[in-house]
Length: 509
Image: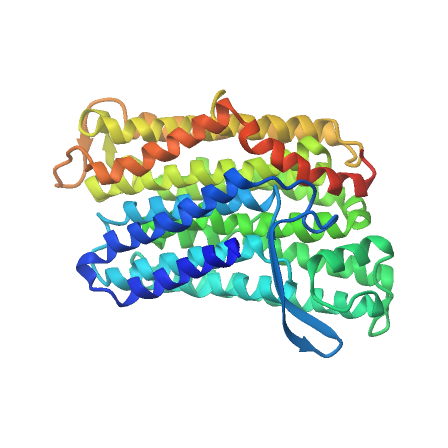
């Protein structure tokens, strides 16, 4: 019942915070968020599972109860964790706590509703990573969209309504595409499944796949569902050409919402790709490997080039996320232990680094009231601690050794270069590695203009040291980034145990 407790505490905390007085809402939300953070760390310490949750049923903290009957199919409350989902749950709870603290300075209206929605998102994100019944998973998946829409639309910048509607339309249409195709797959599997439990569906797929549905043959149905679900999840990731909602959402969203959006919500897409496409459809993964790898490399290069052309610090970080998610897709399609393991490690690493970068940009904006690179220079003289952490975060993005980004990208490149499944794997890997050069270029350009040189600011605001509660969350994130960079086995070993059965089904091991 530990997962239920984790979700229930967060949901109740969200409700309590939502109706609390505004003057105590921030501190109350922080105190409540420490409970799920502590529980998730306890789960991490107590974890002794191995294998993969969908393929061999070796679950940790498993809980299952019949929920309702849908025709011939049972829908259950079915949750559990493995080495893929547990690190993401821990990252979610830590990032939410830190995002709450980072909200204390910029959020000064409707605080109760704001912090209540942050906790509500946290509860549903935990559900997304823990659910093992498709309907339960889809409920949590959709429940994340509405509070994020409100955070952008109510507390965002001048174009917040446009950005919020664009975010909602893109992600909701993608959800409908994914939902419809998956239901068609379940019906196509016929009598081989009697529930929407993901392990049962995964087993049926690997034992023979669908028989057909509405006149479409089994092989064609599997290919159609694979492509439709890939597109649906690719919008959430996002990858090129489905990425256009992301920069608008990030630029208009308040800093704490950007932290969760880049840190965790994007990982919903890559996590779903791994759970559904890359676990249940090994034949289709091999058939579509080259076009998927091409999409990954285009996302890396094109996202980095777009970031290079920006002068808004938030847009630079937003477009760099498109590039970083391209590395995750490349690692997945490599279909090797190092590739898929590195991709999962990169989900956690990018969550921490992007969270740190958005917090640092928020601190700079709070002090200067501008995010434009051309409006400021020499900030190191006025706020050395905050911009020092900003520089350290940028080094993490560049893949500096002894930081988590280096370990993640090394595993991905090593796994992709040696892939037997992916044709031209060496070419794709080398092209993707070129993205690191572009990343270093645009980050160094932005830092050189804003941090170093003589002090200058276009606005009339007096720039001083950032308050302790603004820099403390960034210190925590920086510590975790260095910790995972120095000791990646803290999570990589459990990730590898969960990845091996997936690769075995593809014939690599």
